[in-house]
Length: 358
Image 1 (cartoon, rainbow, N blue to C red):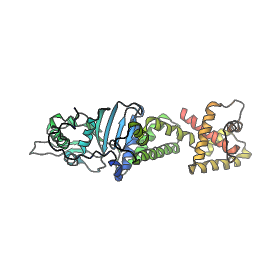
Image 2 (cartoon, rainbow, N blue to C red):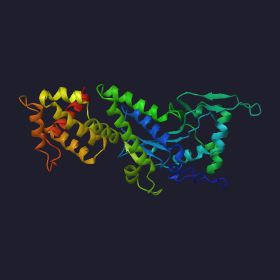
Image 3 (cartoon, rainbow, N blue to C red):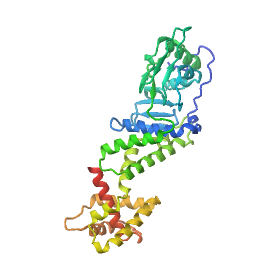
């Protein structure tokens, strides 16, 4: 039976507007950092789709195309400790509990995420002993029975269902390692750790580019507000979701486009010493275009990488000869991309591919 259909008395209004989180700009940045943090934790374990500010602050599905399981999370950016009394007074839990009425997916977790500890205040009147929950994850079922009864009553009253039918087995408190002041730095550090573990030769510039691109992508998805509450899943996935495949594509793209140091380019090209001045000027132009984030250059790197993948370098070819051969296979190549410019581009892609393979 639908848990919302069992009417005992007139329910309190519980906010269920799926767009409401998009208005709380004071905590949006931290939600993005938390999404990156969770994506890093899940990266090696399963396929996933993160949906930001639609069903809840953060929703995690077990597949981007055919999900069967989902977890919903609300994030509260309180710096000091939060008490269960505050959680009940602010009515954070009834909205989370409402997700159980949607039978389209199995719910794995209903999580309350905070950067601070969760407290139960001692009460001699109620016979409650004080508790502090500081672990990374605390199931609500580990709380004392009196506190659980209070939570069930709050949910039951808000949703007009019997407290006896309220199931707290899905509820968890997650204490994030992010802090309000340093959440962006910590999330970047978490991402850098997994990138350096997977790609030991990745540069700091590459890692920085990947992180900034992920922040931009997640922020765009989070701020999109043109959906209706009854939008279908495919539309929601497209406009509000970021999948593991999306993140992988960001990593691959950043590692292709990233421009190595001039010393590396010089070493790989083995360019004639008398002509290194010309090479340095070409490198400076490539670097300048890269700093401008020109779409035309990104497209050039993408097309060149595709051609390199199907056109291996011959043993007798030097790098300039090889880059020229690659250049002639690229359709409508603008004349501004001369031989030395293409030499830098081709060499950059080969160096980045070497880093990724190591």
